[in-house]
Length: 340
Image 1: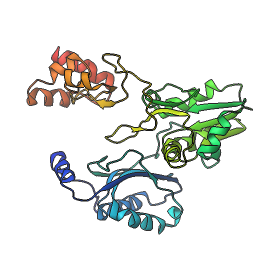
Image 2 (image 1 turned 180 degrees about the vertical axis):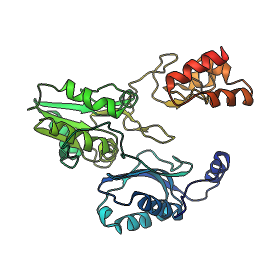
Image 3 (image 1 turned 60 degrees about the vertical axis):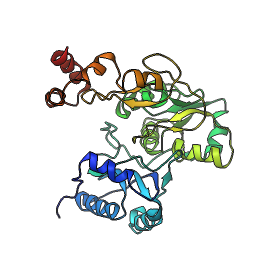
Image 4 (image 1 turned 90 degrees about the vertical axis):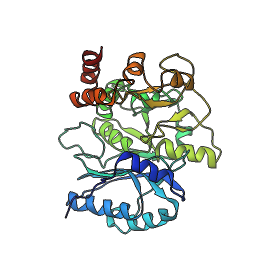
């Protein structure tokens, strides 16, 4: 079968999205299950989503599927129907975004990966299906109050920076693969304690809970549906939110407000702010927190150097982009050597 992928340029995609007359809903789903014919499954999912006008990012691997997507409202029921017709996905839960205008993605990407979440694990006899006990948001709140409970945030440091459960331990790492061994190290000697894990939508807790159980932790629990479901129940069932601030999300919104608390500061002026952005100087593209005032002052750039560099000609910027790779340290070094 011919490989299926987007061939439309960014400008055209953005224009097309802005001209849509219908509303969209941002949602996500994941499932760990064995996929035998990965390319065939990938193409089937691409065709399904393309036919329904779905945009977003979907990863498929031999271990399962992980999707963050934007769905036309009139096709949401059709998506659920088609997914449920796939035997392994018949009971899959689709989580709806909290703060959402549906414009979270501009194109459809469906990629095959070695894993649906990069965990870096190479452990003999590790069984990722032996996960912890699921706790509803209400039960999670109640269990947090127990004396032997330890709450652990398994997300990355830039996620916890803008929102976190009160009293939670954070590994403060850049990636999930770095976080797992750090979490185990932090919890060493607490194998009999009640461990409460949480993440954005639940997928990282699946691996983290199985990882801790593999290493002898006896009472491992995880927030069912993650912060996304927790935020919904805070609003719908009026339960107390022990999560403060924003929930970081991996689309162009970069965050959904759970409470009005602002627990982070602008990286440039240090004033309260919880708005992540990517540096407007494309060769840098650094993720950072920036307030509205600094965004205007630096035109969305992370530093004076990037702001000044953004004024270079298109040809000069293209040359910088051509020379650098995805390693951030290499990016910064080459920018300095090329421009400054």
